[in-house]
Amino acid sequence: MDALREFLINSEEKMSTMFKTATTLHKVYNEYVGEIGKMNIALHQTYDQEKIFAGRPDPPRADIMENFVSWQQGQKELSTAISDNLVSAFKYEMQDLQAFLEVIKFRYEAAVRYQTTLKTAKSWEGRVIKTEKDEAQKTKALAQERDEKELIEMVNRLILNSQIKHYWTSKMAVFRKQMSTFATAQVAVSKRLEDAWSNASGLGRLSIASDGDVAPYGLDDF
Image 1 (cartoon, rainbow, N blue to C red):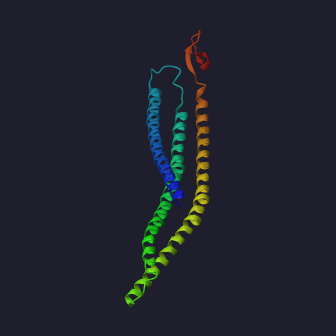
Image 2 (cartoon, rainbow, N blue to C red; image 1 turned 45 degrees about the vertical axis):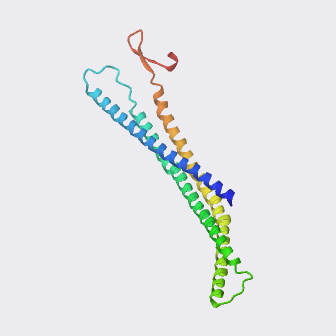
Image 3 (cartoon, rainbow, N blue to C red; image 1 turned 120 degrees about the horizontal axis):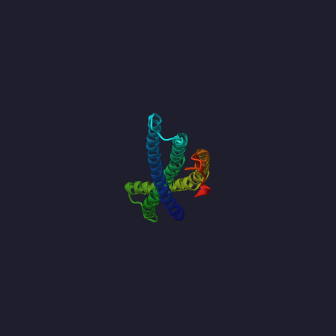
């Protein structure tokens, strides 16, 4: 039981760290998405301004508005996946561990009380019962010792059977499902961003060709 308690304490500490870290990560991603949104608004306003400016240069600025919107949307989806899967998974497993530790704590406290009760019950062994009061006290002490012993045995069965089986079956299954969902979201976001930036990666830079026309530069030209 001591080894189990130490394992649960260490596990709860690690899960608490992961929960706090995932929560911070979600907050940072939300701020990140917000900053991209501010940039996109300014970019959109820049396009609108240049469209109505009579003296705008030719050719016009490359239109990458859709790409930037996809970038923002992808990061927003990733932020949601962090909240729905990482934060949620770590939070509920941490709470399950804390509840498990409360059961362990109750068992240890009951065991301490039982030692006192057991000592009192044993003190009646071999003693001569002289009065009805002595008989009543002995009966009470023996009944209390029996009840507390049964309580500890019941808690032991709960810990070693129900709780452990629940933790290693139901909880592990939920964890696998949430991590699979998070991984799927990561892949989808990566694909979205790949599509967005692949479309824009060929824009290159512009230079003036020998005939005065605008010619594109590719990355190999640098």
